[in-house]
Length: 92
Image 1 (cartoon, rainbow, N blue to C red):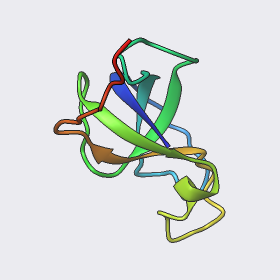
Image 2: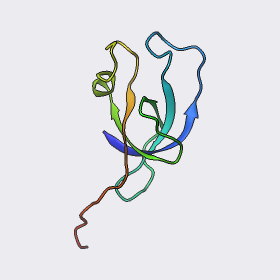
Image 3: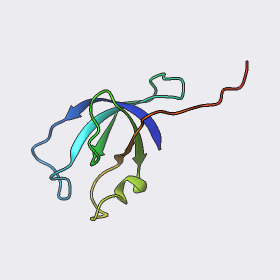
Image 4: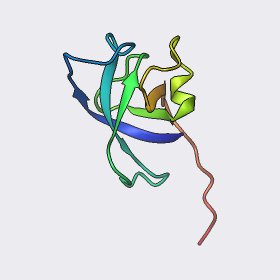
């Protein structure tokens, strides 16, 4: 899992079976210090996240477990919208 920020949407009129009603969002992964990292990920969203929100994303088989049809071709899914987070920082 990783935390990221929703930076956009993907529209697709033709989708594989099992993806017909899925909303797809672009998520930019961030590290714990709010620095952008890695590549942008396309994630399925069933919980109603929006652009600008920080989200939790599951990937791989964990993402597919959320769907009734386990063969749904989803590699990333938004599993939570972050209200806040706290991190203990060791002194330098």
